[in-house]
Length: 253
Image 1 (cartoon, rainbow, N blue to C red):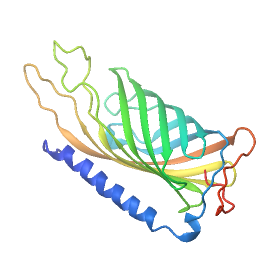
Image 2: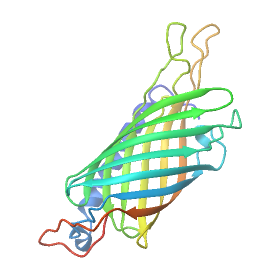
Image 3: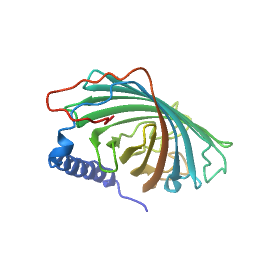
Image 4: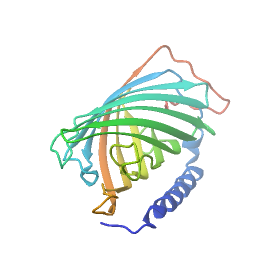
């Protein structure tokens, strides 16, 4: 589906509306959930996989990603996350491909339930026809919840980066797709060391184009994605909790 030049502005507005709904949901949470005011402070190592569809982004079905993430609580308000991902991702136009990514995130909790997250991810894609690398900065909110058991919801917006036009005077070898859009990810813990979840995204991106003779414009599209996640969680060290006067017995990470 081709979009006009104003279409990228619609995604930030839609994200703002969705963020308002999440904030409203947070403010209206039940009393029992709202009094869960402390969490397990041990560092966590999370090993897992994502499986789903990224056909709209040009990948063959299914998309499978292996990942490893370190989650490091810092006091009772902050958390750092360091992760790496690998995917034997096949691009539809080449029928082959591999992706590798490294990411770093910082979360600051305004209270024990609601926080803000900022992430920078660097990804590489190798195929038989071309190689690409791109930086994905994103920001949004993190909400501890109990919708599907102990878990978290992340609502983030990815900002576009990279070269717009590849010209003789421009050093970039290949154009960026200028990927941007909103992603919603829900995680839930089942049992002590397993997690499951799902992630849905709606992105705007632009296809390759030629600014030289003969000129060809860039067609831009909306691309939905859907993934399910399965993870194994390992705790490091002994339990050390930060407790307040009205705390209840919770292990909400």
